[in-house]
Amino acid sequence: MNPLYKQDQRTVLVVGGSGKTGRRVAERLRAAGRPVRIGSRAARPSFDWEDPSTWAGALQGVSAAYITYYPDLAMPGAPQAIEAFARQALQAGVRRLVLLSGRGEHEAQQAEEKLMATGADWTIVRCSWFMQNFDEGAFLDSILSGEVALPVSDMPEPFVDADDIADVAVAALSDDRHIGQLYELTGPRMLSFAEAVGEIARASGREIAFAQIPMDAFAAGATQQGMPAEIVEFLGYLFTEVLDGRNAYLGDGVQRALGREPRDFAEYARRAAAAGAWK
Image: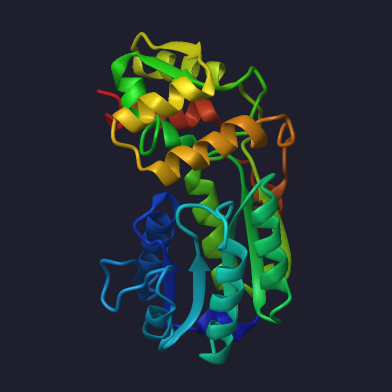
């Protein structure tokens, strides 16, 4: 381990520090005694992906950054934004950059390539669907209503725990053996969405039905419930294109980065249920 990274107590910028993974990364860094700056519109100084003039203030005085792009790297313009931010970070003296990327998303892979080409000390953390989407994200209301209706097939997904993502990201921010590594993170087994809902039903003791519906019906219902149009469009892309089997295999990123097995979906469901997520 490079002692410069080991002993570095300068601030880490966590872009998207209030999100599912960013919040966990920030908590772990703080617990380790590392100063953290949250990169968000509400923070001071503020950070806004759509306003590059905010980037310099967020980068001032930091030594490393964990980068998440809102709403997702699959969105148009995301690769160019990542490249521009990385180059600005390098100009500010911030070489250590850890990027949260998307598995099976063409634009996300473009963003990875652009980051790699900047000359930064990069690590890529490439992930598929988060387990926490069922208790902290888009599917929570459906779980609570007793029916999850999605435009998905029976194709299995290797759902990944956001706590595993955070553990890998913090390791990458703290130890230079992760420089130049691309980690594909998954859980230890694959489940269909119907099977995932079944795991949650068992863990929570709730009766939860699962139904496959057409994409237009899902979009109409999500819009009626107030989901932003860009998120509805993004979910449509994931459901109709990315969930075609391209991610139906397990990765070894957690094992390679941390030397342990990833958390299982059943463990996640039991933990979330015990915390009252679905009461």
